[in-house]
Length: 374
Length: 86
Image (cartoon, rainbow over all chains, first blue to last red; front, side, top):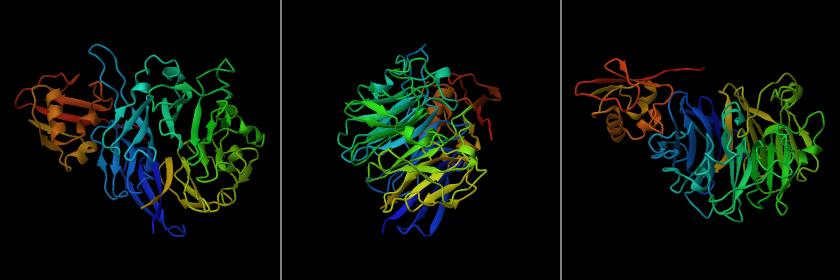
């Protein structure tokens, strides 16, 4: 029977929690890459055996490791994501870290996408062994006004993240740029269109700016293609026909607001989603509002929201949940998982109604991904 | 010639801190190292051929400014990974 794995990428290595499908007994495997930053680690849902991990040591360059035996052994990519060498005498960019990994469409076995900081988009067609830049994005990096540089970049660096593939059209890609906004490509990455109408950008002078926004996490439903995002300025659902965002976070309680980092979709029901609000007031503390952590879930595509905090600390809990650090498993009922900046991993096996702490004392959690292993 | 590597790179060399590699420049030596230990160069040198911020190369105890540094038979190359952060 396939086992359930929850990959936990942290500031100091990768940990793998696993359980049977009953999710009652858990075991911990790891650390892998002890002492190295693991920004993202993902199971390939197409085979349940291939794992990719974005790895960087504090003093060494960035790379990607891959496992084809469900994490028992790892091999480094022969050619990790890297920008082209600039002509002699000209300055060129260097990948500082690989931030995001996305398996390709089911019709493209072996294909993966990677997003980096500085913002770059890369593709592998051999299961992550070798990577090439997606020319349609990377070639305009130095000229496109939506590419974040210098003061435009978030404190930890500008990232390309939230790479999503339209389940109905493998050539149709979505990405998030922090900062820069949401963009989509109809032609496998050759050309890109801003996709930010209707989305607030309170930090820009133009309320209808075409780009420059700060999406924190964008998710495309794997069955229906519905698109949601948790943005720096609210929670949104995309009206795909109008290419316009609707602020579904307006229905959140006013004392909670709709700021946060992750966005999690139910794997089968496109109208069910979860977020984990953070304090986005005053100087942006980015911790649970009032020190009382809670997920919020919606069963009607964001029309109404329900607080989900049973089992979570009732007070004085001040951790942060990062954009890759919350996910769902494919089981029924859906399991939800989130990791915290103080090294805790929490799980719910009843779709958010109640929460249990799976482990304590890990390093700062950067990513949490759940999947079935073959 | 002898190349002394820091512990963060030991996973590439089967935990050997002292290895052999050859070249008339640091660039050639790094290419030879990468042939022997695939992937090791990119962890020290970025795609623009710049030495990464926390890596330093010393040739006979003198710091090399770039990978264009000339080498001679018998030189000793020391690679240092300066630790930082918490």
